[in-house]
Length: 218
Image (cartoon, rainbow, N blue to C red):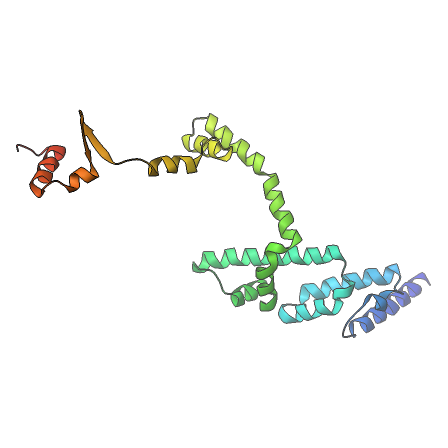
């Protein structure tokens, strides 16, 4: 008897969910009388359908159930798309050596071209992306610690990078000093500047060149 009751409940739930999916657009009002069993079955069925659908069909289905999708599930959709698109770009660039088209990314991921285009356009302002960047910033001290370890073991490049990261080396100041240098040669008390060289004859310049290169008297 319990088996018969369970089967009846299942068939009733299935029919109710099937009728729901037959709607063009599903709203919260449409599921307000669903009990826990029916809601669980609805969620499981929707997940199974999403895993099977691709491209525009998947977009259309998401559009149909958009109003009843929990916020955390929408975030999971975004993360899933972000992962697929990133992996596809990496794979296709390794294979062909250039940035793939949106159509190629869509074909590789199973997402629609519209979804790929929208994701690439809007990802920088998405809260999930901003949270991901904060995670990388959170790990910055760990990276700095690793650089410090290499630096103390005698790695000169790591030491320079470490000093730059903590602000001990001011690149801009160094460049400014170089730019402000005056070009001239001083021999004993005689200063030979660029202006002086311009006033010399060709013969005099040849003599200086011979002295500098060590070819004088040869």
